[in-house]
Length: 139
Image (cartoon, rainbow, N blue to C red):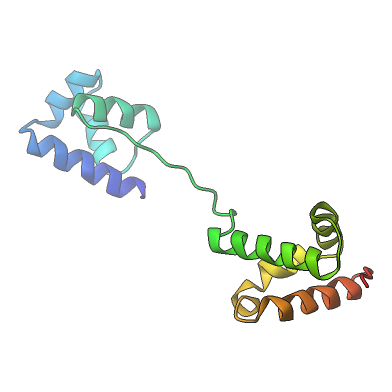
């Protein structure tokens, strides 16, 4: 949620409670001008915390990395690593290390949209080719 929407929510809650900007400001120790800034989207975490407490709201913030892969992708990669280890009769940790070293895991993540439409067996064969092209050589 962006800061402008947060500010609008603060304003809406203040109005629902019949409070003026001056009244809210005095509850949290700032002036009317600061409340106006908060409500227009110029909000810091500290001022947001104070305003939500004064309005008797619960502040719940969830931070999610934009770089984290989708859970479906993670599950798919794990399934492919297991199938790869089984196909080439190697231990799971060895399969993870091999696929990581020779670009197989990156390949699965980067090409998930196409690869997950194939069978696991076809994907394992693709992994063997990708890793082979990057210097690996499973047999």
